[in-house]
Amino acid sequence: MIWDGYPFERYVYMVHATNGARGATEHLNSTVIQLPRFNFREREDYLRFISTASHEFIHTWNVKAYRPEGLVPYDYQNENMSELLWVAEGSTSYFQNQLLLRAGVITAKEFFKDLSQRVVLNQQNPGRDTQSVAEASLGQWSSTWGDYAVNHSVNIYSEGYLASMALDFSVIQESELAHSYRDVHKALYQNFKIPMGYNVEDVQNILTTLTGKDYQPWWQEFVNQPFSLDFDQLLSQAGLITTYGDKPKSKVDTGMGLSGLHNDLILATVAKNGSSLASWIKCGR
Ligand SMILES: [Zn+2]
Image 1 (spheres, protein in one colour):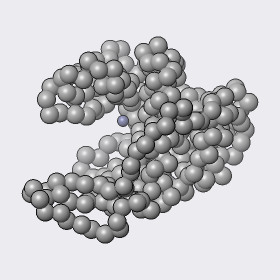
Image 2: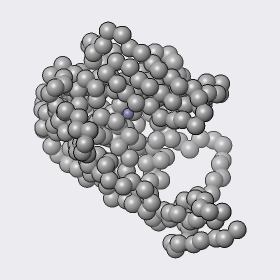
Image 3: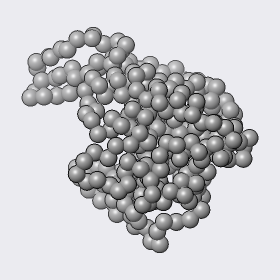
C-alpha cells in the first residue's frame, strides 16, 4: 500500500467492452474504460487492459485526491496549465505495474518486459534531446502531432515514468533504503488533499524531509532540462543487468511515419537522424 488510506468507500469499474471505442477516464471513486470486446482473450491484450485498470485506480489518489495546483479547481473553459503533469500521469504509469506485480496479477517477466520496452522507446525517441518533462507538461495542451511530436517532444506518460523511476532510485539511495518515491506520494496524499494543490517547491520539500538533501539540482538535471539516463548504471543499482538477449533479431526502422489520404500514401513524418529521406514525398497509387 502506498498511501495509508482510501479516498472512497466504494470503487466502481465501468468497462465498456464494445467496438470502435478506446481510452479510459478516472473519476473520484470510479473509472470508465472502453476497449474492444475481445481484448480479454490473449494475454498481451489482457495485460494492456489490466495495466489501464491499475492506472485509473491509482489516479483515485494521484490526480483525484491530490493534484498539482494548476489543476485545482478544474477550469473547464480554459487550459489547466501545470509543469507537474509528468507526476500526475508519468508517476501513475510508474506505479501501475508495480501494484500488479505485488498483487501477483502479472509476472516478474511481464513487468520487466514492459520496462525494457519503455527503455527502448526512450532510446529511439529523437525528442528526448530537445524537451524536458516540465516543458512536456506545459505543452500538453498545445498541438502534439506531426514533426513537432515526432522529433521535438517527449510524452508525459512514458518520459514521466522514467523520471519517476530515476527519482525513486535517488530517494532510495539518498535515504539509505529508509524511503522510496512511494513515500513522496504518501506525503502528498496526507498533506495536500484537494481543495489544496501542490507545487514544485512542495514536492522538493518532501524530498528534502525524506532524504536530508537539497533536490533543486536533481530537479534541474532531470525535470527542467531533457534528461539522458544511463540505464545500465541505474538498473544495476537494483541488481538488474541490461542485455539484448541471446537470440539475434533483425528489424528495419526507416524512421518514416506513413499515413493514408484519399487513396494516396503520404510520408507524414521523418524521424530526426533517422535513416529515411529527409524530404516530403507523396506517392500516388
Ligand atoms: Zn492517466
